[in-house]
Each structure stands twice: as structure tokens, then as C-alpha cells.
Image (cartoon, rainbow, N blue to C red):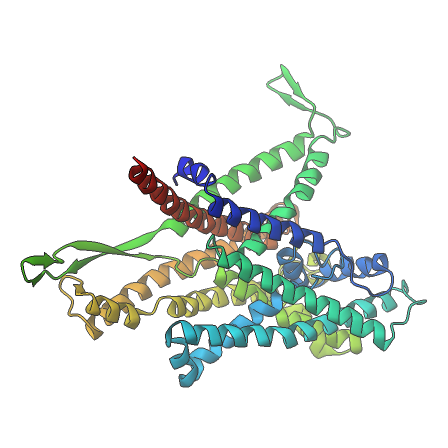
Length: 478
């Protein structure tokens, strides 16, 4: 990264404007996370949300990508989940329906139509999820006898659902505005901002536990006495070292790529010759980035939400209880209630499904963003070829084999990284008898590292372009 160039590019008005627009959107986004849903007493519903977060992994996922919007019962409670689900559905339909696949390959016009359909599908999904969550929360307040004096009217329901749906649509719009600035993907940036926004609370909790010396202080080598909790100090130190190692390997995985040399045929036109040069085609090992993890979490967590709705309507329904039990991620919150006899075979169902979905979505999303036939056609039109490979269909087949091999290792690596929190839980169960519950933290760490690298790369590219233009203008002035 050219950090000096990045700082120099901020002197450019256009670059500064783009950065300020993104920062302004993030500030407004965080402001929306503090506006409560207009439904009765917000404090009452926050208590119901706290209970729900302990039972549903989908709720934890929503709380993560909404920057705590669910925990605070804000108007962005549903967050970006409807848009993510809509993207999954449209992309699956694009692969299943030939006419949609042709439309997606029809250049910018086709992609705009598909994006428009994705936005339109987001609205009904946001309405359905808004109704489902308000219903579940209200039923939770009734079962806990904390809202017996409040009975929502149809007007209350309409206002609340409208506010939550509008919040989801606004977030989708914010994501597209950020993408238009040309500095990273907007949706990923908002999710990144959501996770980062929860770090101060986590750091404050760790700090309070670290400096709690009620159980004694840390004595080093008999000559240095530190005013910190000894147990918490070693745990924090161990996790800090482990996190640095994991971040290092995540960066390496994200940057890993296969370089393919492209040769361009030499052409003679009159007295001039063109081509006869070499270029490179870099293919990333994990071209899909963090999208497979986000898709897998959202896709796998929906059955738990359906189970919550069923059990709210009919508390004794076995089918709803089974959905909640099978599709809830094992965590420190639900371990004692769901697994009173310790680890059983059911504990491994969710991690196994999670791994399989991450693996499948890696292949699926890579096939969407890396069209080998289109790349082969473009190379042939430009007179480019891979040494030892015929242009056209042979090049497409060759690139397909390379991408599939990279995807195999990339999908396995991404799946294993997603499994790290569960592995950590197993270790803590063996040592202490209970998990530490880092499932969502592992996903969050993966998202933060990947999005940060992608956004830095986008900023670096734009900064190089801007400073290059400024350098050319300085030469012209001289």
C-alpha cells in the first residue's frame, strides 16, 4: 500500500469529497441505530430482545450486521438481511433460469435490471421479517409478563413495520451510495462499520474485567506487581496473540493468488507494429471474499427464525422447537439449556452445515463474478493468449480448471477459518466444561479483515490515479 500517496490524494477535492461522503453516511447510519421503533415502551422490548439474542443465532447475526440495531430495538433492526437474502435468491434464479442468465451477460443494461429486481424483492422480504420480529418480540414480552398493559393496535403495527422496512431500504440505499464513490463495496463497508462500532463496548468490558483486582493482583517474577486481574490478564494475552496469528493468516489467504501470463500477438500495420508484449492475469484463491460467510450465516439462520415464529404461536409445537434446536449455533448462552448432558451428536449438526454452505457458496459466488468464457472471449478479441493453450473455448476450459482448483483450496480454507470459533469452544469445553462463545466474533473478524483489505486496495488504486493526473498537470504547467 502507498500510504504516502493516499494522504497526498486527500488534497484533491474529488477524493476528499468521496471520503467525506462515506464518513457522513456512516455517521448517519450510526445515528439511525439509536432511533427506537415506534412500538410501545422501547425499554420493554429491549428486554425481550435480550432474551431473543440468547436463543437465536439469526438474531445475533442481525445484531452484528446492524451494529447493535437489534439490541437497541432501533428502526434498522432488520438491517441488511433482506437485501442479502434477496441477492441470494436472485443469483440462484439467474443460474437456474437461462433467460435470466442471458440477461446477466447482457452487459451493463442487464446487470442494472437484475439489480433493480433485487431491490424490489428486498422490500417484501423486509416487510415479512419486520412483522416476524415484532410478533416474536411481542410474544416474548407477553410470556415474560412485562408488557401486559400494552396491546398494539393495527395502527401501531403498520407504523412499526413501515419504520423498520424504511430503515432496511435506507441502508440498502446507503450501501449503493458508498459503492458509487468507488472506494469499496457499500454493503460490506456498512457491515464493517457495524462490527467496528461494537468494539468500544467490548474493550470497555475487557478493561473492567482486567483491572478488577478484587481477587488479587499479578505478580511477575516476584519483583513486579501489576494492578490487574491475573486470570483475565493471561486470557487476554493469549487471545491477543491468537488473534494476531489468525489475522496474519487471514491476510495471507486474502492476498493469495495465481498469476497467469498472457501473451499478445505481434501485429504489423503499415510501418508500425503493435503487440508482442506480455501481461498477467491474477486469479485470487478466494475471489468471493467474505460473501460466502455472510450468505451462509443468513441462509442457515432463517430456519431458526421460522422456528421462533412457530413456537411463539404454539409453544408446544415440536417442529418449531426442532428447527430452533437444530439451526441454533452452539454458544455459551445456549450450551447449558440445549446440551445439559454435554456434547452430543446434535452439537456437530450446525457447524457441519455451516462448513458445507460456506464451501458451496464459495464455488457459487466465484462462478458469478469470474466468468471464464467472457474472459476468454475478451482475450481473443484483444489478440491475447495463454502459452500452450488455444484461444477461445480451450482458454475458457483452462481458466475453469485453474479457478476450480483454487476454489477447492480457497473454500476449504474459508470453511476452516469459519470453524475456528467452534474449535475454540470445543477446547474450552474440554478444559472448563463450557464454551466461551466466539462464533459470531470469528465471523466478524473475518469480515473486518477482508473488507479492510479490499477497501484499502480500492483507496490505494484511486489515490494512485489521482496523484498521477496531478503529476501530469504539474508537468504541463511547467
